[in-house]
Image (tube, helix red, strand yellow):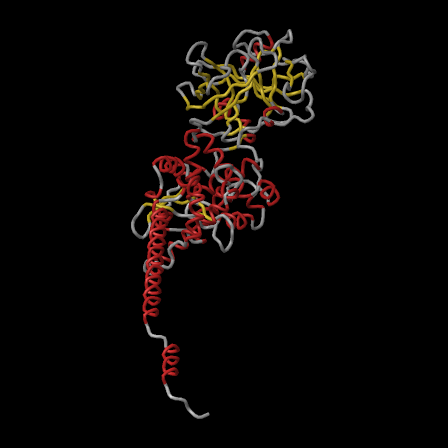
Length: 520
C-alpha cells in the first residue's frame, strides 16, 4: 500500500488550464462539479484581455483544457482538447485581500473528469501541499511542493517552498492547493513573492465561501472528529476503557460522519474493530477522519470494507506521522523500539503488544518514543512500581506491512526466542528466583547466536538474566568437575586398598598344602 497523500489522481481529473485569446496559458482553475469550476478573477481578466478589475461582459467566454486528464499527443504538450466555458460569477480582487474569484460553467461535461473536493479546514500549519502550474517556458507544467502555514492579515494562507523544486510564479494563479494530510483542496493559489523568500499565498476555502456562499453545499466542513486528536484520557494510563465508556465517547462522533446513521450497526462494527485499548479515543478519531475522506463523505458497510476498516486507517496514520516527523537518522532506533514493543506469544504465534518501562530503552529509542507519543501512536503510563511505561496505542499499526511496524512478521524466530526468555524470567521470579528456571546450556548457546546481531533489542534485565544463567551453568560445571575428580580419587584409593588386602583364595591353597590327607 502506498503512503497517504502520494497520489495525484484527484487533481489530474479536475485541474483546468485557462487559455488566453492567442491560446497561451494564463492560469489554472479546477472543477467543483461536473460543469462548474473555480479560478481567480484576475486569471479571467487575463484570458479575456480586459483591464484588471474590469467586470467581464455578460456573454464572456474563455477557452479551457484539462491538461492532466489524459496523455497529450507525444511531443505536443498543449494538444489536450479545448472546451468553452461561460463566466457565471466574477468577484474582483479587493484591497483587503478578499474576492478575486470567478465561477466558470463548462459548455460540455468532459469524459473521465471529476470534481475536486474542497475542505474548509482552518488549521493547516505545517501540512504538506502540492500545486500544479504553467510557469513561463514550461508548456508541460510543473509541480510545486509547499508547507502550509497560517492565515495572515489579508486572510490568505502562507505557503513556503518545501525542500527545493519550483517556486510559485506567474502561471500558477487559480490552481487548487491540495493538502496531502487532509486529502482535499484547502484553497486556491493567488499571489506569490517575486523575490526571496519564495513564499506564496492562497485564498483559503473559507475566503472562497465568503466570496460566493453558493459554494457551501460543495464544501466539506471541518472534521467533526478532530476533537478526538486532542482527547486527554485520564483513564488511559490506568488501563483499557470499558466498552460503555468507549461507546459514550465515540458514538456521537462516529454518527457525525455522513452515511453512518443510515447504516444499521455500522457504529457497532467500528467499535468492535477498535478494541478497548488505552489509546483508542485519539487514534479512532484519526481513523474515522481517514475513513470519512476515503469514502468520499459517505461511509457505508461496503465502503468501510473496501477501505480496510479501522486497521488500515490507523496504518495510514502511522505512515503519515512517520513521513512528516520521522528522520532517517532515527530509522534504526525506531526499528529497535518497535521490536521492544511487540512480542510473539508461544501459545498463539500472533504479533501482540508489549509494555516496556522507559528505563529499558536507550536514549535514541526514548527520543523516538516522545515523538510517537505526541502523535498518539504510543501510550505512556505507570506500572505498580510507579515506573513510567510505554506501549502501542493500538494493535493495528504494529501488525501492518510497514517496514517498521511489520518487522515482527519477518523476525518471528527472534521474537519467539525472546518471548521464551521473558517467560523463563517470569517463572524464575515467581519461584523465588530458584536456580532451576535459569537458562540451560542449550538456551544460552541459542541466545549467543542472536545476541551478536540483535543485542541492542535485548534489555538490561534480560541480559542480566542470561548472565545469571551463564554463571549458574559455570558453577554447575565446576561442581560436576569436582564430583568427577572426587570419584576418581575414591576409585584410586579403592584400587590401592584392594591391592593390599589378602586374597582368600590363595590362603585356602596354602592351607591345603599343609593339612593332612582326608578320607574321601
